[in-house]
Image (cartoon, one colour):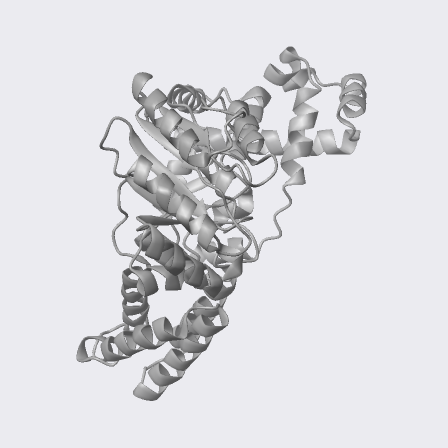
Length: 433
């Protein structure tokens, strides 16, 4: 997400840091490069113009020019203005009503159906009872797709395959959701390859019945400025309360995200970061701005860890570390928890990339090492995982065959495990735990 623009901005700031004393000429050069980086990232030119005027006024102010660290002050100015463009404060969902109703709108292929399921899944994690209603009667198998996705995630669905009128589906689903006392009803509407009057009238009629608390426009981040144009047309028919940008894990330049709030005044509410049901992240403008500028998102990393690590397991692990009882079984648990947090490259993106951590970004991360390590440990017996000293040559050959590796890989894992044990022991002596 935003990788291209982040890399360019961080390079510009690194050059500014390298200057012993910043002059107005240095600042002008830096601001020109920032402007080009934003335009290349497909940010709307009007947004870039307004943004650069505000940044230039503050960057050349006395507070920055006379500070002991002018380069850091400029980064702060850019961060503050970027946060303002993205929307400043993350806005909570409107969950009033019996039930609260959400209408999903957007063009065909934007990921609308998948996003509806992701949103219901996220609401369930937050303690809300959400039910889905597929009302896309136009695209072949669209309703069946939502039913399959919802059932795979264990989510309830109101499915009326015999009903061909989306307005009737909305009406039936709303009445049933009230009877079943659901907290939220999420309706998936029809998408189109092109906006047409018939589609818009249908959406308007559905909104009249549903009276949605939230009307979300689902936009594919890959289409850039076209997302802004499409959202403008949808907003004219039924007022949008939020944008959900999908496919932010792809080759998106990030321009739509940086333009859409400033252009339309409609906040971005969520980002779709992958194909799996849990891959929907609330949009926090300040944290996104910090990640773009290489300041990291430690809060986001903590949230990922809290989702992956059970509190009880974490406490048990801490106790084992205190007693220096860390086993290969514990190592396997750690690997599985790390995998739940997502790819290691994504985890590294949450870290601030300045100072001693900057080398991490340049690391060639080989995720297959974790797969191999887990396969080796899986091929051991419970006794061998608890007491690795039992691993003689015969046992190692058996484990190598079972894991599809070789004895050399097993010896390497044992050495790594022994090094970890030594480190844990030393930390225990220093009362680190």
